[in-house]
Length: 90
Image (cartoon, rainbow, N blue to C red; front, side, top):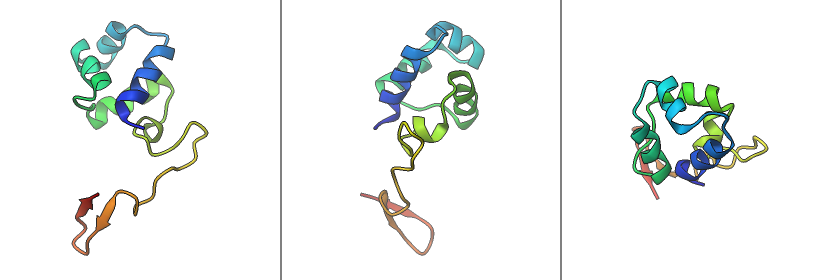
């Protein structure tokens, strides 16, 4: 599941409005709109704060775990990992 879908779901259940969340994160409201559209993702710093405010794990929002917290991907499911550490996405 994509970040955009999970962030939309989390925001629907959130006690804050999108405007309030943007103010607390010190970002523009349009940034949140863009996340929901899948046009971009938050920085690590903003993602950290977002997880705290939404009471969600980053792994869940990023699609690395399911609703129960179980891991749903492995290092081998994203692509080929080369000896130089680079990942070739599939």
